[in-house]
Image 1 (cartoon, rainbow, N blue to C red):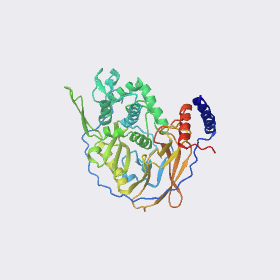
Image 2: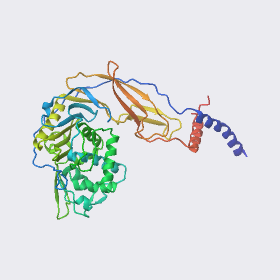
Image 3: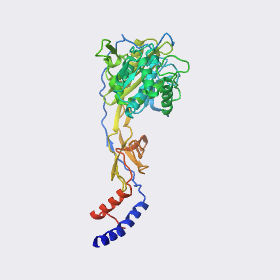
Image 4: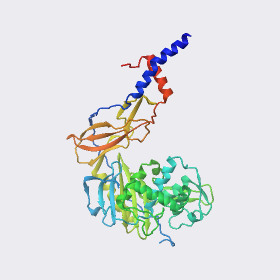
Length: 441
């Protein structure tokens, strides 16, 4: 009898508290914060070395002959950097700012550089758990019949996704690319539709694909700017550098048909900091290259299109990279691991959540520029549950000493947070009452 009375009294106290908690607005108001930091400039840039061009990918066969741009205010258009290229661009990979441009929006054939979009889709499928590196891919007659650059797959031959990716990234293999396209989408046609959809998602206006290999075909084109954006998107999947940054490797190692892979991008061996990304060559496209290199915190993306031969292509690509490394510096203000704010939630599976930038926050500037101080305004725009990693919770606005906005980045959470259900909320309320955390006012 005493227990029954006690339960009734407890219910009388608890139920109104739960109702009151449900009626309360769960949004937490966060005031803007200003944080001032001083950073030292880093100017340690190394010299580049010469290159060699004895191996080249050739994507020619007998059967088959956006987003608002972010540009530095003082970017150069001096075409003497790449006088022979039809078009080209130099971009900072972290900020997306353009350092150099030449005919950047001109629609041209881009040969095997097309495969960068195929690589993005492959890596997205890996990261989503739809396919695994150890999955076995069987080469169809269509895939094995592809000419041009290849790893000489035979019809019915089985190879892992990882080895196929090696073939695509290092040997620019058409047969491996088509095999992976069929493995993921069923047919190359459907895979190319996925590629064009990805291009639209990136906001690119001067790119359209007709195949997944880059073979010359009417209506298959891109531009230097679009290729740079595609390269930047590919670099978000850091795994790609484990393939594109390797100079030599082997396929079918434990067989009598051992195949030596040599990277078609010679810069990864001869240019300091180079670790990708993709070469290309067809009759229509001539010689093309999407190259990336990193020194200290500065990662650059260089694109050259329509070069007459591989030697000129490599030389002019290095000229772009040299210009960037010799004249520019990057200042990393906040990384995606830096917690910029913590907020409390009353009815969440986690009582406190941490906010981090969705992307690194960096300032690109000339080496001659003075060190600056920056302040940060943090604005919380959404803490409605549930929240998951990648959701926009707020923004961090970077301002210079003149109170001028120089950067803005989305804030997201470091963990998935859900709303407490009724039983969980009831239990939390009881616990708060027992430890004296309940506010009856």
